[in-house]
Amino acid sequence: MLNITQLLDKVEKRLYINGEWREGSSGETFDVVNPATEEVIATMASGTREDSIAALDAAHAARQQWERTAPRTRAEILRRGYDLIMERADEFAAIMTLEMGKSFTEAKGEVAYGADYLLWFSEEANHFYGHTNKYPAKGLRMVTVRKPVGPCLLITPWNFPLSMATRKIAPALAAGNTVIIKPAKLTPLTMQYFVQTMIEAGVPAGVINIVSSKSAADVSEPIMEDPRLRKMSFTGSTPVGSSLMELAAKNIIKVSLELGGNAPAIVFADADMDTAVEQVKAAKLRNIGEACTAANRILVHESVAEEFTEKFVKAVKAMKIGNGMDEGVELGPLVEKKAVERMEELVEDAVENGGRVIYGGKRIEGKGFFFEPTVIVGASREAKVFREEIFGPIAPIFTFANEEEAWEMANDTEYGLASYVFSENPDVMFRASDNLEFGIVGFNAGVVSDASIPFGGVKASGLGREGAQEGMFEYTEVQHIGVRDPYAR
Ligand code: NAD
Image (cartoon, rainbow, N blue to C red):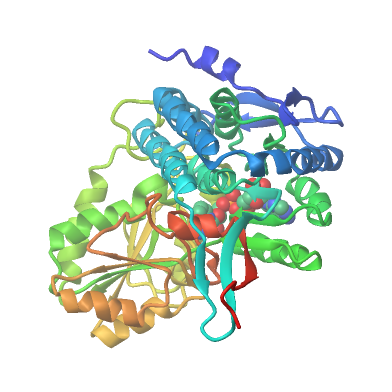
């Protein structure tokens, strides 16, 4: 049995810069709150502009040595990190549930998924080839190598406190870069414990630095204005991503952006209805709906809308809501009070736009930021639940009359991250791929994320990919060496 007090005591609350744990230079702090109980569970040192520059100094100084460390050595450190996280899976999961709210079972799932990036990129580190060839006509040979890009600033959101960070840190370290991590202020504890674990795994001083702060801009601005920073990778909302891209423009810093989503889940008349219901429920309510890949708009063919809706409501009704640490709970609280108010605003707006709440629709009174899982039918396309990212447990169901209308409705958003399609006709998979403007298409599957896939979006959902070999490319620069061919005339 885990002792929660002892576990929280074990998590470092200070900044980690240049191989040492230290208080923030201003002495200021901020609190972390458990969204299920509204209790303060930790008080963190808050990093300042000076701390941020100190972290960049450290990352810059450690750069060359880490870059020259053998790939195998880097791989072994990542692999040890993977083993240690898996050994401590219950601890990581409990920390995540306490600071973010998701159920312990889901948190355990995220630990395995997040750790998997370390395993995947530990393998990738050893097999990261460049290429050689002859120029087709000139008397030269080509040697093309991929080099680490340099110090990286990695900014992560609160909804997946471990995996959104390991997707960046693992490829960055595998490729030979040094990093500065800025976790979300709502959920810094998971990342603090992760850094402690990676130090034990053998990451040298300066290679990994963490600057939690109550002011994100204080950490990002000073170092993004410093030309020693060479890469910024951000996961979070589209407006913040866009403003960071502007900052990056000044020094032409390489950027990766994993931003918001507004995923359609399209259920065709020939879909296996039970699979569709189960998978759409997972796509919608995984992580309490607080996922960039969450099915935001459920689009169902009009001939099967009644059957789908009935089965979907039945499946949602069966879900247990409560404190994520309690046995059997599937849906925890939302992350903060503001999120509950946002759900109320979305329900009210949907009703004003013709929607009918057929299940849920209200906050749950008492301690904690709980909101009922909610199903809405009949809202128009003007409703915010169609137009905006919901980021909570509201499932709006819309109908379409034919395939063309389904693609058109699906693409009617500025976002382009995940999309889901349910049909028993394999041809529909290729037509979906041709027609959908999204980086990810799940075909008869509601959860497709994995360390082995190139995850990312198009349009306002971002730039670049995380995971797979593409994820490693994001942390490298290509260098070409043109060599005179000894046989050239
Ligand atoms: P957010 O944009 O508010 O914050 C994300 C991170 O940026 C946090 O660490 C925050 O402290 C920091 N930040 C905020 N303002 C900043 C500024 N001015 N300068 C520098 N850093 C700043 O997003 P959030 O509420 O934490 O996360 C939810 C959003 O993240 C949703 O839009 C969701 O879709 C998106 N998201 C995307 C993906 C993806 O892979 N595409 C994954 C998870 C979440």
